[in-house]
Length: 454
Image: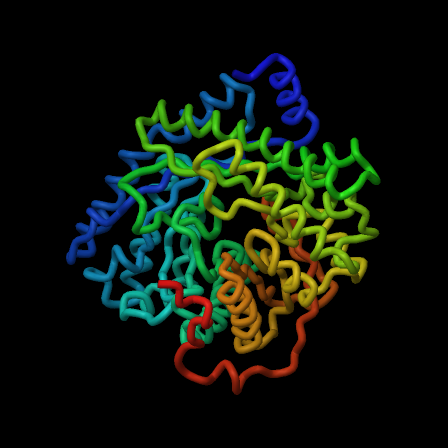
């Protein structure tokens, strides 16, 4: 049972420290919607999503009102669409019709985003996978709520370099298709290595094939809560630092567990996982960078940053797994640049570079996230950035990702405004030395030797 002190403490976290449930995400399997007739397939998809998710937003709001816990987003993830559309889609334009159906269904039920316009190509691409990937620029330009993702590698399979090369071009095309909107399409497109099946966070959420027909996953976030806790033990030793983060993560996860249990019960849908990720927002006091600086760094990006982030990520996970039996997704600390005011400040003062961010991705939850780069960067350079990040994930047996935005018409020092949770991105410099010859090689990078564990 939660005692009165814990109730008061949780209220303080919500009112003054930016504690929130970042998302309730309903995962929906579309495998039983498959049909060789494209019109029938689209009708099946629309019917199933609108039927299962019709009460998702209403239920989220009722829980908010009843428990006083902010639930920022209500979202849907679906089976990777490349698997669903393969029988009916013969062109990229056919897949775009599915994206529009998903967008229409998401708008009908009132959710903030829908993820799962995705392909899983860590080893090779099927014809359907390639068609979906090639459709992404047009799909994201013609929808508002749909998010896309592509899994390009894994520890077990290696890295599909053909797909890595293609995604550099696709990201550039997506930027071009949405240039009148700040190249926003790229903010809804992420590439992964070792993508999890149960991630509730966008843009990378999809409903994995290992999941059931319908499930509720909840993502909780509280960077401000952790920073506030660390302020009370300023300057104390590492043991105290670790214990404080771990205990705080435990408390935050319990809030998520409560919301998840209620949502599952009220919707009559199986509970999946709690994702405890310190996901920042542009709001003051809701920054992962601020946590690192509270630990004793002058600014994020200076020597010691990777060690501090590793400590934070590990203790968050240790605290979370004690509070729920079903912690999953990407749990840990996110480091998106545009969504974290402290990260933005560190980029502007010159202490945080793409190279330092890459080092930090070795120990954080995901990877290079919400980076704005000059719009004239070559597609092969983007592919090279992706390949480096996929290699980190593959070798370290962790999830890594890249969400990079080449902003057409912008150069280093400029700023692009996305608004809302996506924030503001300073355009970062990129190493322009060519990797074209390396990226142009065909085939795959094999799985590392330590992948052979059978």
